[in-house]
Length: 435
Ligand code: FCX
Image 1: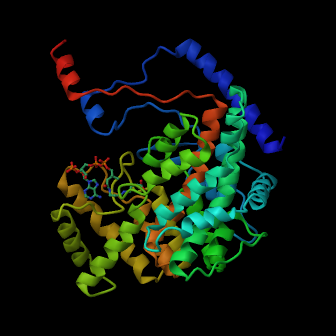
Image 2: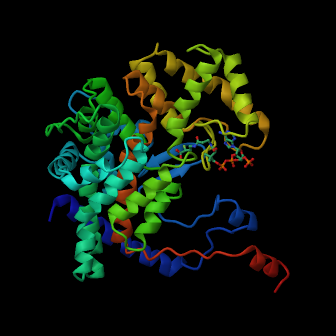
Image 3: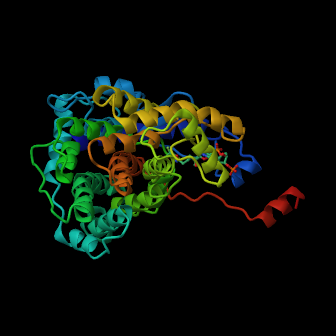
């Protein structure tokens, strides 16, 4: 057995024993109360899930296995000559719960390189879609076509024992992660670059190879991809993409089925699609104003107009966070280092100065601060990646690391089918009447 798989198994067995003890002693303790409003309002604030890979604090933002983004930038292994973390190293951290050595990170990189071959029928499935199809639809179709390769589905059909579920899931997760950059790059080149595809470079790391296959062979773009793939990887368990992957996985749907379901959720404008919406919104504002560099006053007027027309300001607000998203800050730092004079990036920063007080003054928005999506598109545009409809696909490739590490844990801990109780308003009324 591969050493990483062995390490995971040892960690998962120890955790399962610990959880068993914990539940034996404390299983009947109340972890929270549920109000009627929470039931009707998106279950905000209800604790109802276990996700081991990361934890979100409303004030401080995300921590992956206890490490903040700046700490990850300092402590995780890097590519040769690079200064951003390797997302493969973050995957190891989320999976094993300990910082990887350089050797550990290299081991994951090399597993991913070896498993990266995508069978032809996947490309054929993507090619069958009209060129006008949204890239996220092509992406999910590609992932679904790849489901033919599921070891879990095959082994289950052959009579897999419960105690071995985790191992097939582990194999599927790594194979799927290995193949996603090729699928994403294929969609990009098909839709925007005349189907002139670029073969993978067997020596590059996971994100470097994605950049290369998309046609961006610039060392600082490789660095951006490494940072991008790291910060988008996970955001604890309750967000739509993570929760969906977990929920569908709880029916013992394999990694391909579960991840594809989660990515359909990521494709929604209130979740991952917000990154394309931000750039679209800025372009529309620039067009209306007739300038690439809107003033604070012009931005303020445009925000008011957006709100008056009943739309949200994309990239702002969050269901859990109550401060500026550290993922926004990490991208701002990258911008300051690599492109301090870029006009679009400077506009993003000016929007950051202008928007929060306006949203705050409305009195109803719980978080007026920017989230991850407010910044990511402008950095991509700087390098020439202007096709904003594609941005959510990049988010999706990254999100695979977190949701699939979590799915391996779900099987490692033998989590059961998820099935919360629902009510009807009629039943609520009867309950209120004491019936
Ligand atoms: N612009 C305008 N109105 C906003 C807003 C924004 N950016 N953010 C919240 N609101 C509104 C809500 O629409 C809601 O209005 P309503 O009472 O009239 O229905 C009210 O403020 C209260 O919402 P709130 O409790 O603060 O926020 P929610 O938890 O319901 O929603 C999201 C959180 C993220 C969905 C919301 O802030 C939003 O729509 N933001 C814009 C889209 C976006 O950037 N999404 C990406 C989020 C994230 F980072 C990711 O998943 O990628």
